[in-house]
Image (tube, rainbow, N blue to C red; front, side, top):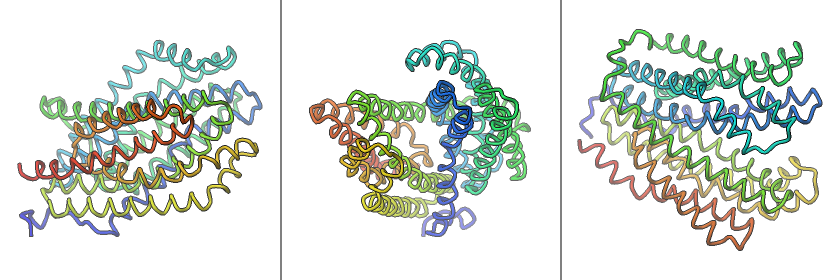
Length: 443
């Protein structure tokens, strides 16, 4: 029996892990829909350059906005700890500080839209007609930046409280609003890519409004927090440092995947297409594992806040077991049904043959990456973000060295490097876990 008061002991069971994980698994599956809806509606217009512009726009905003995905993870971790300690006032303070950071960061993105757009368009290297349409899409949708980042905060706040069901509700609501608005503006009012951008932007605004209503129903009112509490020096420094660490981690992760795509493109169009098909398998596996990472983030954060070491260790064990079990199951499914998936996604015989040649690598990613996903949630919930950042940099270094060492293997070497990247992250986090746990519960 540990010294945690009974009122603060966190329930950690297989059932609770599943109840937290499954809604977020469904939520993660909906995430790509914002870009997909725009592409589908624009695709109905039959203009290839418009579809290309929206596709490129989705990639640009995925990079720009998800670089600030730290707002979700940091808010979830800090909120979980405040929830675990039973401090509702600190839950609201955490929410208010994170919203303030989100709004400021969003306004900075708006202020820097011209240099961001110019650099992005240059890197895209698209045709003049695509770039013109992309410019329209980008310079309209960028105005939603404060709302997009605020939605990350609101989602993180609901997750930290253990309300992943509400997180799923909010994500679905944003996507439904996006579908309706984009369809109306593009097909009904014939606004083209401008309609797609405006529809997506308004959907983010709707998400914030609905999110505030949900949070108020949960008893939170971030607007009632005094400015002095929001700007409390030590608390704001903690908020910014946690966000900084996770942001660096996210950028390294995004760069690793961008390098993977870029190097794959150099091996030829067929290999690029085959890798794209297989990369979608990796993403599907990630959706399942991310759900359990979110469960780990919530449970571990709440146990840290409650000073419930036994509950924390059990949360870690169950998260690792479920992540590894799902990783193993998904890998087995990919091995068995991967050929069917490839044939379904692509009709090109050369792409199909090439993708099947590299299927074994893609099928291994959920298994090799299982511990990395689980420990990401554990570390975020415990706010061990400095270690999380450093280990990601180490993994990125191992990835880079592997790419250089096996460059003569072509695309095989590329997939090997990706597996090394995933495996190194999990191993590094497992090695540091005992030390960090002792530090967290010895103070």
